[in-house]
Image (tube, rainbow, N blue to C red; front, side, top):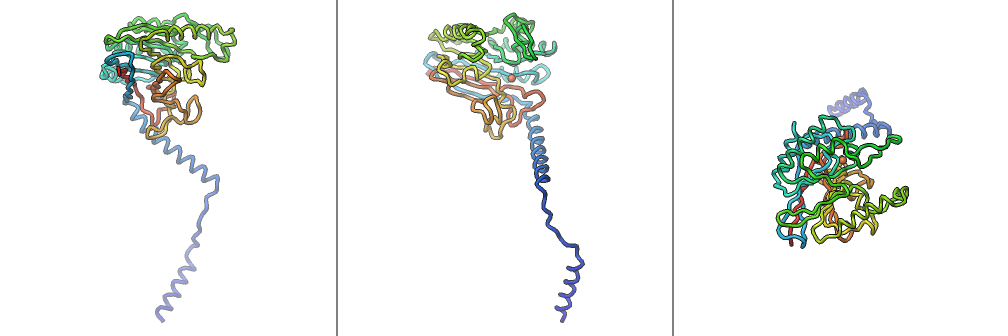
Length: 329
Ligand SMILES: [Fe+2]
């Protein structure tokens, strides 16, 4: 009887309780929540990356060759853009000095075309400290091309720059650093003969070469042929990997080591060192950062560089300098 009363009471409570409804989210709401969740995760990752971005990593590669005995250490610095590591870039100088390089290679995009006087002063100051560590060889990137050379024409926002040097390049050369664009030097380092060059253009004939009847390609080709004509170890500073990464036999030059920057490892990268999300080769680009075999002769090392991209911070992609140890077999 008591049990029956209880059951009755429970029935009454159940009847008076508000009806529980399983609410289903609309598709639109699910998408909005998904986007919000993605933005939240991205912002947290970006915040963590901003903290990590204050520290410069060192990526070390070892190159074996029978062209030298002993070893030569190259430190590669690239793509500083408008970033600074310490008030006077002292962290960048310290990281470089710690590696005890024989050669410092600075591989472009250290300034932007519309640089300020303060930015140029900072870069000149950086070069003055780098040349005290080791001989500095520098080349040009897409962002500092028109900072280094005078603008010839400006067509629809596209700048065409010639070969006449700007103030920025002259001041950087006056620090004692050697600028290389379609030029090379034969140097001796630790008793080893090295040919070091700089080459910004494409190492193959391009469609745009048809505009001047092939004259530009003929000049580039002549330079590359001359550069390759030695038994010394050949080291090329070439800002953009795509200058040599083409499925073309013309691009198969006899160069031992090609040092590149430009990609910033996509700026936004996958976690756990899985590579860039996006680059000039499209989604999940092959040539984002690291070491690659190019053609039958060359090894290419691509630095992830130092800066992000404008307002976009590096995510899962710490800034880096590269150490390339060239060692005799
Ligand atoms: Fe860059």
